[in-house]
Structures are given as structure tokens and as C-alpha cells.
Amino acid sequence: MKKYVCSVCGYIYDPQAGDPDNGVKPGTAFKDLPADWVCPVCGVEKDSFEPQED
Amino acid sequence: MQPVRIAENIYWVGGIDWDLRNFHGYLTQRGSTYNAYLVIDEKIALLDTVKHYLFDEMIERISSIVDPSKIDYIVSNHVEMDHSGSLPMLKKIAPKAGIITSPNGQKGLERHFKEGWDYRAVKSGEVLALGKRNLHFVLTPMVHWPDNMVSYMPEEKILFSNDAFGQHIATSERFDHEYHLEIIIEEAKKYYANIVLPYSEQVKKALAAASELDIATIAPSHGIIWQKNIADIIANYRTWSNNGTQKKALIVYDTMWKSTEKIAHAIQSAFELGGYNTRMLNLQHNHISDIMTEVIDAEFICVGSPTLNNNMMPNVAAFLTYLKGLAPKGRKALAFGSYGWGGQSIGQIDEVLKSCGFEVLDGIKVNYVPGSDELKNITEKIGEML
Ligand SMILES: [Fe+2]
Ligand SMILES: [Fe+2]
Ligand SMILES: [Fe+2]
Image 1 (cartoon, rainbow over the protein chains, first blue to last red):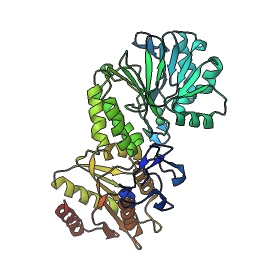
Image 2 (cartoon, chains in turn green, yellow):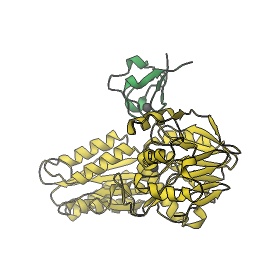
Image 3 (cartoon, rainbow over the protein chains, first blue to last red):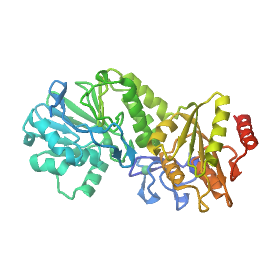
Image 4 (cartoon, rainbow over the protein chains, first blue to last red):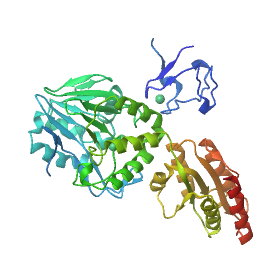
């Protein structure tokens, strides 16, 4: 599964790790994150994320 | 208005804000400084500026060294207006100066100043050659804005760290060997607690990057410059960013007719008996920004409010909103309060404390006025939970 990078603060969403602090289980793909999920570091919404380039 | 020499041909040329007592809601009882640094080499660079109303002071300092119109580069390590607020005035005096900033810095500055300035957006690892000396840029996003970066000069071993390691202190002394170390550390702690705390994970990354650098001087954008006590401030940043706590309990409350205050004292007794250091922090007398300095190393945060009009008291709500945003991790907490009827405040506080991710003990709720037996029971009950 693809990692996504926050374009504002550089936080990387790793689907393998999920975001357990905010109720997102490990193994959750970026596209399956709830619509109201925000960057756990800077608080911007999902549309500020870009797929990580390899 | 004299500049202060930091190294050969490198000067502090900032502004001293002796009268500042409130920095967007953070009480700055000691005032502050906005530190700008001038590097004279084959090229002339100014690192950061000052709040707009101290522009003349900065220019006076620069002018005693060099004609400010000769500045080639302005390095903007951080968009926030305490450091970039003088850019428009400076650009009028030094029109040929290019602005070096991070990509997010350029975006932020363009939103503040609608000017077609000559920007150069740099990434981590890029270098600006000034002649004999160079500036290496390291992006430090979210310490504490997306645009933050620091500049490192290897030839002089100076880290221009911007807000990181800063303190709100207005002094004519510029170096840590000239001033009281305990006060500098206390103000650095308050700064960390009120500005940097939510971004502790990013701080850890920045500290890891900094540990690879040979640093003899940390030149922050507020307060005193670190030279003699670099190891101390780095060690403190490490502790604070790791949420290191001590056996310390805060009892933060507001009260109407002293019933919630009585409960507060009963809770304090339990912690005293349990060997904790305690702080009684009545919100009518303690500012939330001072309470945050105590929060930074406190294991327990007890929050109390009577119920007023079916709600917690506004001072308590303000504290909880501030606390939640600054997001300390791994704390224990407890809600308490007195009520006449309804009694919603205790549940409301409990809910916020849980949403902070704290381990929350059972709340304490007393109708109207607690009797001496009830107070004794509260002390005992909490004692059993410690
Ligand atoms: Fe982010
Ligand atoms: Fe700032
Ligand atoms: Fe600042």
C-alpha cells in the first residue's frame, strides 16, 4: 500500500502503521481513511496529502 | 542601539521589546527580544528581522556596521510576523536583497505580503555561499510552523535556530554566561510549554539532525544566545520532547463559593501524603500560560470547576482548550467540583481530559458544600488510587 505525505508539514501516513492514536487501525489504506481524518501533526485535511514518490 | 559581536564579522542586530507583556495570549512578564543576525562577508546576509515596530532599532544597529542598502540576502527562517514583520520596510531600503526561505516560507510570505519579491526557496541540505563562510539550511517543519527552517554556519559552528531554544527575556546581555542560567532555562521551559510542546515528535527529529552538527553557538530568534550551557538546553529539550514527568501533581481549578476549593485542598492532601510535589493553581490568579510551564513535567493534572449555568466555568474551559491544543502526552488526570443541581461540569471536564488521551481517574462530585467527613473520604479515596 502506498504511503502519503502531508504537503504542509511533511508527516508521512504509512498504511501499515495506521494512526492508532486517532482510531485508525494498522493496515488502513489512505483512501479508506475516514473523511474527517486530519493530519495528526498539523491538522490539515486529506486533500493536502500527496502520494509519496519512490 | 549598539550591535553585539558574535564572531568575526557576525553581529546580533535585533530589537529588544522591553514592554512586551502579552505574546498572542502568552504572558511575557520579562519582555522579549527579536534576534536578527548580520553576516558580513563577500556577500552580506541578514538572518531574520524584527517585529515591525522595532525596525528602526534594527536599522540603527545595522547602519553602525554597514549601509543596509548593501544587504545581498535576507534569510527568512520563519514566516511569523515577530521575525518577518520588518520585511516590507527592509525591502524598501535594500531592494536588491534576495529572500532565502523554505518552500512553505515563500508561500506564507506571499500570503502576508502581496509583493513580487525575488525569492529563492531552499530545501534541506542546500547551501548559500557568502564568501569565506556558508549557510547550510535544514528544514524543521512544525517546529513550530510548516515554514520553519534553521541555518547552520559550519565555519563558525553557529546554529541559527530561530524559535527553537528561544526564551522571552528582554535583556541587554546577549550570552548565557552573562545572565542567570536558572531564569534562562525557566523561560526556555515556558517557551517550550506554550509554543513547541505539540510538536515534540518533530523536535526529536530536529535534535537528531542537530546531534550530527558541531555546534559552539546556538543563536535563537528570542532571548539569550547559548554558548556555555548548550549541553543543558539540549538535555532539557530532550526531556521535554520525551514528555518526561516528575512526581508532581497540579490542582487547577476555579471556584464560586469555595466548595470546589475545599475539594481541591482535600485532593492536594492526598498527593502530599503520597509523596508528590503539588501546585495549587486557582485560575482566578494564575495565567494559563504560566500553568503550562508547570504542566510540562507534571505527572498528574487535576481540574476542578463548580457547575455554573449547566456548564463548567469559562476560566476552566479556556484552560482545557489551551491544554488540549498543546497536547502533553502520557499524563494522569482527574475531574472534580461542587454543584448545587445538575452538576454537569465534572462530566464535561472528564470528557475533555479523556479526549486529551490522559489516563483519567474517577471524578469527584460534591453537592453544595463538602463536610469534613466527605473531605476526609476524598483524601483517602484518592490516596488509594495513587
Ligand atoms: Fe501535516
Ligand atoms: Fe514562531
Ligand atoms: Fe518567534
